[in-house]
Image (cartoon, rainbow, N blue to C red; front, side):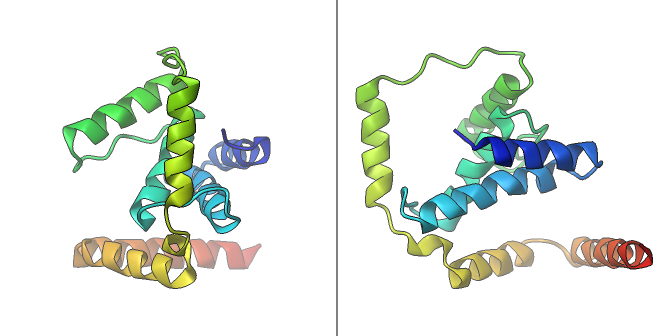
Length: 152
C-alpha cells in the first residue's frame, strides 16, 4: 500500500499537467526506498520498477498498459488501471497464507538491484532500446523544460 504522501505527490504532479509517467515515478521511488531500507528485495531492477508502476495504476495514475509486453503483463496492467479508475472493484484480497508467502519470498530477494550502479545500468540499457529520433526528441524536450524553468 503506497503512503499517503506518495499519492499526494503523484496527484499534485497530475494537477500540474505533468505526464502520467512522471506521477508514477513517485511510486517507483517509494518502492526503491522500501527495498533500500530492507522492507523487501526484488529479483531485478525491472521487477522493482514494475511493482511501483502497478501500485501507481491501482492508485489512479492514468498509465497505459505497455505496448510491447507479454499478454499476461498487459492483462495485469489493464486490471490495475481498471481498479485505479474505479471501473472495477479490487479483486478479493489474497489469502493471508499467500500474502505471507509473497512477502517472505520478496524478503529473500537481493537488495543490490536498486543500488545506484544497478539503476544506472538499467537506464543505459533502456536508452539503447530507443531510436536515435526518440533520444533526440527527449533531449529537446528536456532542453525546452530547462529553458522555461530558468525564466522563473
